[in-house]
Image 1 (cartoon, helix red, strand yellow):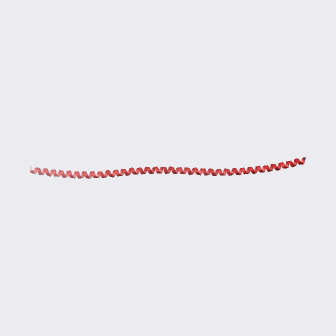
Image 2: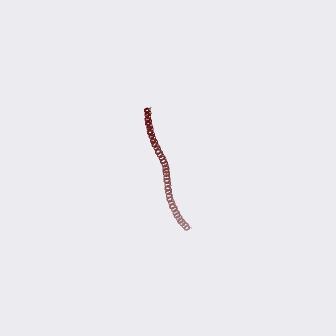
Image 3: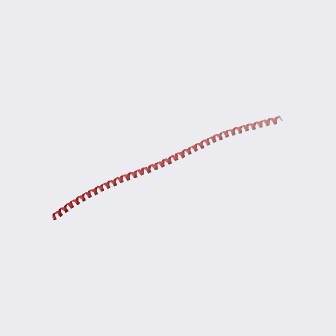
Length: 128
């Protein structure tokens, strides 16, 4: 009976040692799993942060592009307005020159008409 008890104790000791080894192995695996989960969560958070920053930057770039297009449209409108003002100035100058030419021609026509009247009266006076 004593020999059977000693065998049972040795067997129990081996089982306890194997149990302890398996428990340590399980603890190590749980620790590694926990570390992996923490790393995964950290990377997941970093990915979310990066995605948020990317979305923000994309929106900033979209707004900048829209602002740039708006500035280009305004610049084109300003250039068109400046061209229109320059053309208006040319038209006004041409109008003023034409007006002066008409006045000069009217003045010459008036003088020529006055000379013709003067010549006509002299001729009528000579006939009398």
